[in-house]
Length: 155
Image (cartoon, rainbow, N blue to C red; front, top):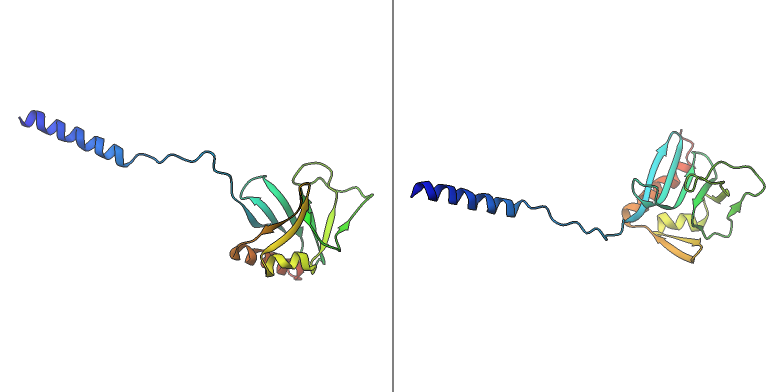
């Protein structure tokens, strides 16, 4: 009797263990989460809105310490009355598209840009019109760090 009982109990134990350690199904249709991300490359700081650790970005702003303006790249740009477009100059490649960059700058102290850190919203314009890019409280701190770094004299 033990010759049959021991293998049967062992088999039931293995089945129970396998049922408990089954990996959950992943939601393949889940959309990637977009958000604000800060990175540094040498002296340059980059604040981007997009999917973390990917090339899926809607907007990227770059600066170096001590500058009075921020360069803007991407499919959208801030809606600001003092947006500076540089025309007629040869510019670097757009880091988002790889094409010629139409250089857009915004003053570091522009209220539209400052509202990202203070109110958690950046009003932008794209092909679909004007809309807001939100920032959660931790992202507001990231934006404030970016603006402070850009306005500082540190290297």
